[in-house]
Image 1 (cartoon, rainbow, N blue to C red):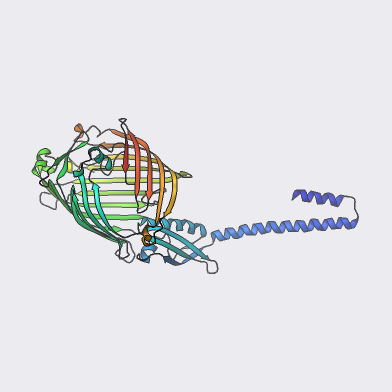
Image 2: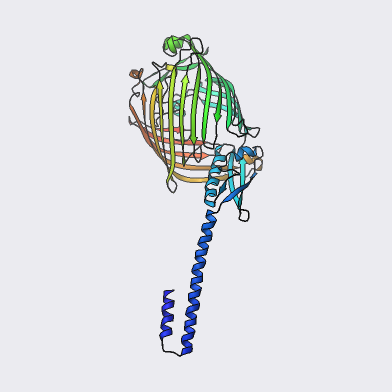
Length: 495
């Protein structure tokens, strides 16, 4: 533009007649006017775009499709906005994405799409939700190992420690996200029981209830830990332990991400005389049976993008458990446990993610019996120590992961129309590096278990496979502080 103006000025001052000068002057004025008009047009466009982004739209309606069984109220309960909300476009985009994640985290759907349609005349927005429901009735044939993990079982390959039977799981009962489970299991740990969970029992969908009963019995149990290894007693002709438990609980979920859970449980357990002879501190006061009541409270705030395999967000849990209230004859159980679990997930760069977790437990007991003295080696462990059991009263553990998205989430189409719920199979692969550290405090039995009261450190690399119905398969290579190496297989998210 500057070069054009210079050229025109030169032409005006050049030797020419008056008509020529007037002509060039008119050209200059026209071009100046056109430039001013164009600049103003750009300013007006920017202003209109800014107004569009800031403009508020009131949520007018929800249009839901694909929910052949699920009630609409169960779906709208997970939306990050309500009919009363007025939102701008940026807020809508953010809340739409979060609502889609919330619906997937209910485990009711394989696929969820949430979009919106704006109406500038009425300043309203219509929400459009499309879901693809899962299969809700599962006659699960049981063929599972009973060891603490698959890697421990591979050391012995003892088929006596295999369970078989059937679990009948009825999910999304009545279309209200209720779950009923019937259990019939034989083998190493026989189990017979049922459970029922109702997420909401009031109109506001804030209060839920659950109850369960289970009976267990075994021909073999671990009666002691020595050298950080479990010692077992087996009797093929009779049961060495019988247990039963009954539980009822309430949960309160006022908003989308915070939940309060209170459970009351009655539990009884008895063992054979042989167990008492092998370890007279298996139960309290050299008994062969115990019965007690337990009360627990859990607060959970879950803001993860995906519960089965999270990449972004966080989850905080705080719990308190009290075992024993002196309500039964010879109850004599007095455990008080405080727990804290914090996990964070975030994106470092394109296709690269990080996660950290801290878990703490503090237990008060004058002298815990073996039955309650559990720490690492079961549900919780430092990676690289899968073959060990570290008992104790209190513990602390820190975990860290860096994940690289080797194969981004994709969908494999199976050309089978009759199996619609299984025709689209999502999958993804992640390459992962990790490091863990943990410490278990054992005030009473550490002499026979050297890993107690010592720092446990493990690190390694892994490959994770994630697919539908919340299935995760992990293959890991780990090295622990004792320079022991191993390849381990797991069936849950790394953190």
